[in-house]
Amino acid sequence: MNDEQISDIIRMAWEDRTTFEEIEKKTGLDEHQVIKLMRKQLKPSSFRLWRKRVSGRITKHQKKFRQSRHQLKKIDPEI
Image (cartoon, rainbow, N blue to C red; front, top):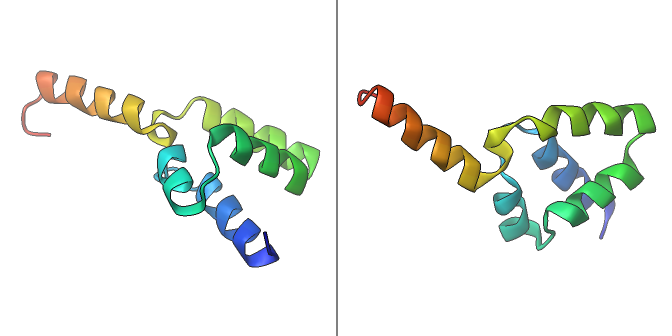
């Protein structure tokens, strides 16, 4: 992998709306491989910050995101 590809993966991993499933479709790296790449490429403090941020985000996991939207639609059909 070249520097530009690594940079693109890191950018996608930081984005809230880009799911791990989308990253896998575009790059072939699954969630665990992305985590390994982030751990290797980021400073330890940046990695910890990213992991803390991603761990609580349902938008990083397509299935969880769809489930939450479905539940919201039950509460408010206008969504």
